[in-house]
Amino acid sequence: MKPLYLASGSPRRRELLTQIGVPFTAIGAEIDETPLDHETPSAYVERLARGKAEAGRQALDAGVDGCVLGADTAVVLDGRILGKPVDQADSMTMLLSLSGREHEVLTAIAILDGQRCESRVVRSLVRFRSITEQEAAAYWASGEPRDKAGGYGIQGLGAVFVAGLEGSYSAVVGLPLCETAELLGHFGIPCWQTLNAR
Ligand SMILES: Cc1cn([C@H]2C[C@H](O)[C@@H](COP(=O)(O)OP(=O)(O)OP(=O)(O)O)O2)c(=O)[nH]c1=O
Image (cartoon, rainbow, N blue to C red):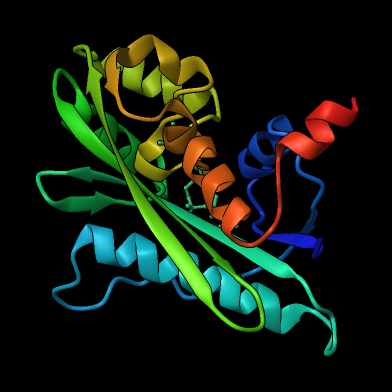
């Protein structure tokens, strides 16, 4: 079995991959995340997931033979990508625009080895209850929105805003585990092997 590298600085992605019992090494993979003109959100997250996997591969020492996994998550409202909030005003504007409405969360994963790259985009729908300005300000002060797409974390305090979810919970957190396990299988990396050995 080839070794697996996770090209990500996200602690959530590390925790999620650990959850399904796959041994891996985390490596950095910084890329430019600027959307291209007229790029759809789905094409955007897929390009970034592939780009992160590719950047991770290039960061490995020459001659290292392994698979590299990259992922990207975007919160999409009315066809527009909401990134990570840059300050309190940005965070509050984002959260209040999501208030009382449904939005999409798109997460792409890509795995590559020396020969090929395979990717998937997973779409989930999240419905928020109404949120007051005071709540949005207090949420920013908690520190949670800062490093998260759309300015919230469904796995944290942000859960109190979530009235409904259709799709993949793990994808919203940052890594769709069902699809990740399936794709890893295509590269000869089973999740169950380590689980059974426990
Ligand atoms: C919507 C949502 C996003 N997020 C996080 C997951 C991702 O870490 C982040 C989306 O930004 P990404 O650009 O996908 O990932 P990242 O920059 O954090 O990490 P890397 O590129 O190194 O892999 O938002 C949550 O933790 N919970 C949520 O509910």
